[in-house]
Each structure stands twice: as structure tokens, then as C-alpha cells.
Image 1 (cartoon, rainbow, N blue to C red):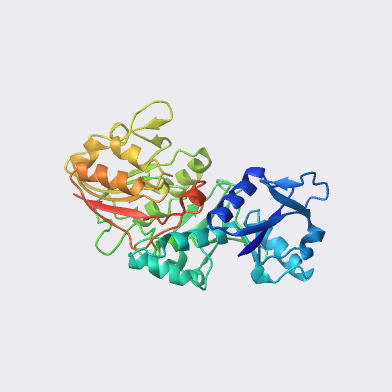
Image 2 (image 1 turned 30 degrees about the vertical axis):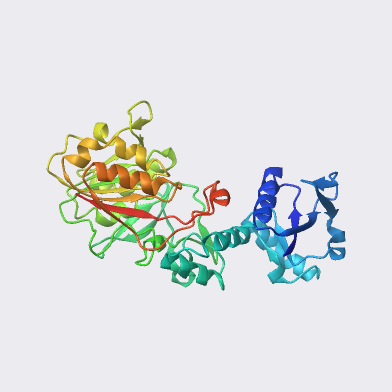
Length: 369
């Protein structure tokens, strides 16, 4: 396949390097770099010739790869087609290259779930969740504003079927539709088919459980179960979220404790272990949910007393880093847990190393002792 790479003046050269790296790994024939910069001084980039945009029609190419991110691609693509430079199908972004890399890498893989995703990719673009979360299942929750605390909120449905106000930081970037603010897809990643599903029919928060939520964010997981738990500990280190979370759980101060620190394997300054942060719980029924951006193995190492002194069910995220699945399962097995994983696979596109690794990842490890 013969390609050209479209280079934009505001794009970091390292970004163009990554595009070239992926194209070379796929053994594509790079016809050249086409620059959108009218003041471009380069005549070559990585030994590939650099051409001004007005010369693209003189080049022979099958696919043009945009060296830019999502919204820029969406904005520029229609203009390129209008100018008659190529068809919509000929213009691709770097996620298309990742999709080609992974298709090549896994084409002989024996895992049926991975093969199902490769089949899906024949007619669909790559996403974090792929066929596991169809786009048509999206929802919109209307945003309201509480003048008493100066915060926006939505109405969130809890386990009982009742609704509670769930607050967001002031100035949050909401989805705007017909002049009104909305939060899209608040529970989309918790669809039954999702590889990011925290609970299943067999792995649930039970009445009377002590719930520990590490990585609270807006608090939808905790709020869902707050009425049935006996006690709840919420860990969210981002100061942006503290006021909103405090407002969401203001009527549950008798059972909810908010701890604004990072969870890790040691205690110092802004970080703390679960064992140090929590009282000496013994013989309790615990549900531990942990979604802390790749710090899960470190946090588990600082929770030995909690995990070995109680009856624990845990849902631990393992998709942020490539080796987290192995590390998390190994630690839990050492603590005497039996483990399983969520169905399906994720492609964690936000990982800056995903284009080097080009890997599928399991979303959640379920554990119980």
C-alpha cells in the first residue's frame, strides 16, 4: 500500500515520527510527507521528501494519514474531499494505523474473543470498547445547577430505583445539545457486555457490605450502593472533585468518609496505604472497587491487613498498563484470592505507549477470598 502523511504546522515532530514508525512496521510504501504549512522549510523528514499541499495531486497514493488528533481530523476531512483531493475513504487518522497493526499482530491468535473483534474491525473503526459497547446505546442526563452550593448536578438512579443528585465541579465541560448541558453515557461502560464492568450477577455489592471505592471521580459507583452499605470509604485525590463529592454524599456523613489522598504501598505526604487509611477492620464483608490509573498493584501491596483479615470481594482495573493483569492477579493469589476476569477486551487508546505495544487488555479482575 502506498501512503502519504499529512503534516500540520502545530503538530509536534515526535507525533509525525510515530506515524512514520507505524507505517514502516506495516511495511507501507511512504510516498512522502505533505505539509499544510505554507512556510515549511523542511525538504525531507526521516529521508522522506516533504511536499507542499498543492502538489499532493501529483503524487501516487492510496491512503493519506493525518498526523493530528480526533477533532482536527473531523474538521479538516470534509474540506479535503470538497477540494477533490481524495475520497472520504482515502483519509485516515493514526487510530486506523493502530487497527492495522493489531490486525496483523493478532491475525493468528487462537483467542475467539480477539478474533471476534478482528472480524468486527473489518466493517468498523477501532475504539476502546469496540463491539462490546455499541454506539447506539448512549444516553444523555440533563445538567441542573444548585445555587445553594454553586455546583452543577444530574439526577442519578441508585439501586433502589430512586434518584439522587450527583454533583460535578463548577466549570465542567458538558455536552451541549440545543443550548442545554448534558452528561453523556454516564453508565455506558457499565453495560452488561462491557469489559469495564465492575459488578456481575455473581459478583455484587451485598446489603451490609463495607464499600471501599478507590478512584471515585464523580462517584456513580459509590452512590449506586450508598443506601445498602453499612459503611463507605471514598478515595479521590483530585482536589477538583472534592467539593462535588462532598456535596453528593452530604446526607450520608454518618456512613461515608471521603479521603482525598492517593492510594499506594507506602504512607507519606499525599499518598496513603489502605491499611493506614482505614480502621482495623476484622471479619467484615468488604467490597473493594479500584480504578486508579495504573496504581492498582501498588495499592494492593499496601492492603495486606485489609485483604487477609476480612471477607472480601474486589473489582480491580487492569487495563491502564500492559502488565497490570499479571501483576494484579499475582498479588491477589498471594493473598489467597480466587480470580477471574471481565468478558471481552479493551484497547486502551489513551495509553501513550499503546502505539508501540498495540495490545488487547483485560479490563477488570474479579476476586474473592
